[in-house]
Image 1 (cartoon, rainbow, N blue to C red):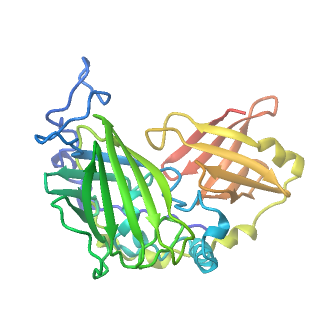
Image 2: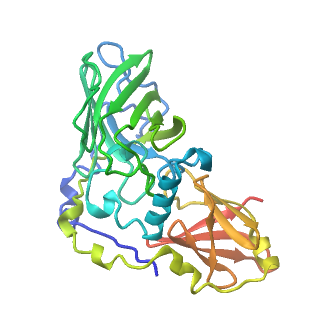
Image 3: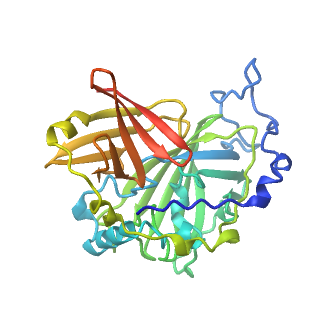
Length: 356
């Protein structure tokens, strides 16, 4: 049985009008209709460096869920793979989000979720601050100091940065080993080092590459791509996770429970669902998600945005569960041809049109 827990801070809802959520951001170039011109040139500071300041929405459709999506199975230590499986089986009830703890290095790729993805960057010549809605922050020092070589491990680690032309390069070290690298539960040790490369290619778009290195867990360093879009004319709205901390006791069930109530569907029917499905408006985020449905060994699999294949468990001929914690349903036309896929969420059904 899957249980979806939604935590809402009621006092915040009562004061939305006072949060500047719709206040026009000063200094933004605008089109003739008054909308922000996100394609305008990137701003620069007085010393000529790109100014990364602003409120940004991170987009990390692939790596928020599976940071190791581009690694081969043998490049992850067996004990780490077992730990991910255990955490997945428990629906992530011991994740940082469930325990109301900082995400640590995961903030770099956290996005595309109800509570994640937004950050505020404040840039000064010697220090960059990254603020998160959960009241955590990062300090990136640009004053020439060397990165700590023997740090006291902390939730957010230690970060220093420098400019390489128009790219900000940030080196981080000194994370404690209590955090996860993604929502699936990929672990890391205190040996983790993280390198981020930020480039503001125009006014409204920020490209980020994150390189992770932890030789105790992973066979090689690897780089994941994240991007962000400027959240113009709005502000961060704080949320405090432990304002309602009594819900975790209701986080029950196991992922393997899906197998117990699955119904058997003929292979020739399952094979008809194979294809690529692209999200249609209304979108969950600002860019469409993509779902790949495959069929192998008599089993139907779903893969959203390249995160990795997840087995689908039939609840009816067209309805399935087991997909990233969500239910899906295939839609047929009057001729019985599959045309769409619905991803079912507490906020509504999201339609994905079949492309092939």
